[in-house]
Image (cartoon, rainbow, N blue to C red; front, top):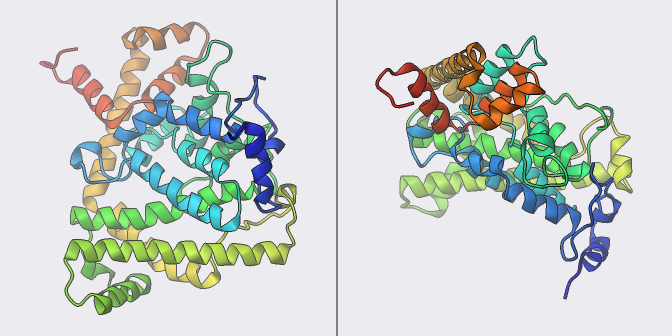
Length: 383
C-alpha cells in the first residue's frame, strides 16, 4: 500500500532541481493533506472536478464551437498540453504530478470565443482593472469555484497557483502579483507547461486549419519543418491516405520538437549548474527552451499560422462577430443587472458591478453565450 509519505519518498528519485511535493509552500487555508495522494495529485483532482474545467469542452480554441465537432476545444487542447508536458517532465525527471495539475488548470480563465472574447472583456473592463485570462484563472481557483464549506475556491497549492498566474507564451503575457515572485524564472515544471502549450497550439492549429480547408497542404511546401517530415513519411509509405499522412506529419513534428526541448534543456541545466529548485528562480532567462536551430526552423511555421490561419478572412469574421456578442451581452447586463441570474446577482451587494458581470461572461461557454445573445436580441426566442 502506498501512502502519501511513501509517494513523497519516491520523489527522491526525481532530479535535484525538481519541485518536491513535501517542499510545497502550502495552501492559503490550512487543511490536513490526504493520506494516499500527494498535494499536487490532490490539486489535479480538484481541478478535474471543477465546473470551470468541464466548461472547457464548449470553449473555443480557434474555431467557434458550432463550426464542427472535429476541431479542438479548450478541453481537448488542455489534454494535449498535459500529455506533451508530462512526456517532457518525465524525461527530465521533474515532478509530473505538478506539471499535470498546472497543465489542466492553465486555461481555466479563458473566455468564450477565444482571444476575441478576452479582447472584448479587456476593453469593457479597461477602467475597472482590465481582464487578463491568467489572472482570471487564478480568480477562478481562488474564489469563483464554490465547492467547499471551509474556504472559497479550490485552495490549491502555491506552486500550481503560481503556474496559472505566470503562464507565459507568445500569446500570454502574465502580470504576476504578490505573493508570486515577479523577478527570475518560474519553476522548471511551470516552464515545461508553457512550452508544451506552444507546441500543442502551433501543431494542432495547423492540423485544424488543414481539416477546415482554410489551409492547403500545398501552402506549406516552403516551410522546411513540414516539407522534411512530409518527404520522410512519403518515402517510408509509398501509398498513404491524405488524412493518415497529415496525422503522421503532425505527430512527427511534435515528436521532433519535444526531443529538441529535452536535449536543449538538459544542456541548459548543466551549463547553468542548477542544483535545486530555488536555483532556477535566480536565473533571469528561461531554462526550458528549444535549441537555436529549432527556434529558427519553427519561425516560418508560426509566421504562416498568423497570416494563413489567424488572419484568414473567415477567422477574422468569426472573431469580430464574437467580439460583438460579448460587448452586447456586457452592455445589456450593465444597463440592467437585474437580468443576471440570482446567484450572480446576489454578489452585487459586495462586489463591483463590472467585475461581477465580467466573471459571469468569462465563465460562459460559446454555446451558452450564443443562447444568451439570442434570448436578448431575437424577439421570438424564449427568455
